Length: 233
Ligand SMILES: NC(=O)c1ccc[n+]([C@@H]2O[C@H](COP(=O)([O-])OP(=O)(O)OC[C@H]3O[C@@H](n4cnc5c(N)ncnc54)[C@H](OP(=O)(O)O)[C@@H]3O)[C@@H](O)[C@H]2O)c1
Image (cartoon, rainbow, N blue to C red; front, side, top):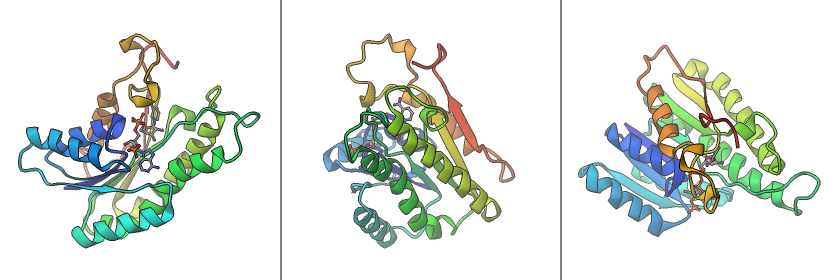
């Protein structure tokens, strides 16, 4: 099995990469930072010595970068089994007060990245079924999050994309899952003065994803909603 994971250099994407490595799944990792990706690769290969891991840099908020990434993947890989659309960014701002251009940035990184990459990867995913697509939405893709309404708009759009994709691929042996995590420790929470047990671990999200891979071909986990035990922040 081979998985393409976006935003794999840190946080939730890194945890998913490590969890998939544990299942001996070969990895194609991407983010904008080549040094961080190489460090993730050697960290994982220290534990799983012979696991193939390929790293590619791309700014997924630019369609041309996504097309270049896809061309590199097609050149080096004849199939993929799992696509994790995880790359995303949080910017604080409401409809009322956000600076001009913020929504466009959020939509490019949080929605169009997944939309374009998925369309380009579908022929590779169709080669062997079952295939798996995971789209990293958020609790903020289900309900308004105070102070982050533009982020919510982009994640609601990703939720819509993911649910429509599920309908489109239902007959094709490709399982589509939308993930809605609540607050999860990552760089996004750097500097937050909160007790460690108030926020979920990135490995919790990764563990939930791993459950999908163990289902029989006739079952799909369509949605995964995770919250801190003590509720939303
Ligand atoms: N942490 C939470 O509480 C939480 C809750 C709900 C949902 N989420 C979602 O979960 C996903 C991962 O979040 P995280 O908290 O793990 O964030 P993170 O630690 O900031 O990691 C984000 C990852 O995405 C990559 N990335 C960001 N912008 C990119 C771009 N334009 N092109 C390519 N790669 C890009 C980053 O690498 P580079 O910066 O090097 O490119 C990094 O690998 C996001 O979609 C986020 O919205 C997070």
